[in-house]
Length: 269
Image (cartoon, rainbow, N blue to C red; front, side, top):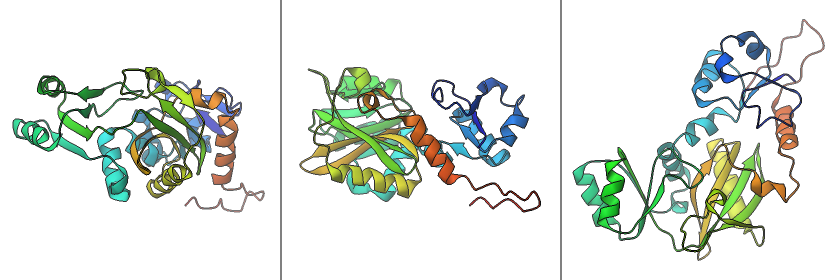
């Protein structure tokens, strides 16, 4: 199995992968065409690889497209699991829509930038002044109800299964639970229903590499978002070898190579 990687850090333990700098994409096109899989391309490469060169990529194109910004992601969740997302409005930033938000949401509520991760670009809006400040710097209003939680779950899905899960408990006086924002990790008592929800949604949307953020309120589960390039700090204490899981999945997805040179290669579904 021939592998090309565009991310040296994420494929450090995958010795089979040949690393190519993303900026050398077109210079190294012959190596790319010859590869069975392209690993961790940058977003600007994805369409050229899949639609132009007809290459298999990992993560897959569904994961990239839906994970590229919160609007696409949230609307996909609205389609397949509307009961499992917090009340959310996504609107163009106009004076009328600003007033609509103030009519529909009570303080405090959450406002987000559409392309952000690790807890950055997420704001707790407690009054009109803070809301107007958010509006001044965002063309799209992404507004979400604030759930009564002090923790959430990070559930990691790779290939076709959940491979890890843990609680992220927010720091004192912080409404963000991200580990990058000071959240503390706990592996205790992860609800099986939350794992089942992630497995169901990932399979329905065709996602194969993501860290899902899940909240629990009175036994009901809410999906905030997923991160394509999730942090791996929570995997370290569980002795999970991510590269072995990825390689096993890629092998299962790769058609066998015929021994007879005159036998046509199997079609890729």
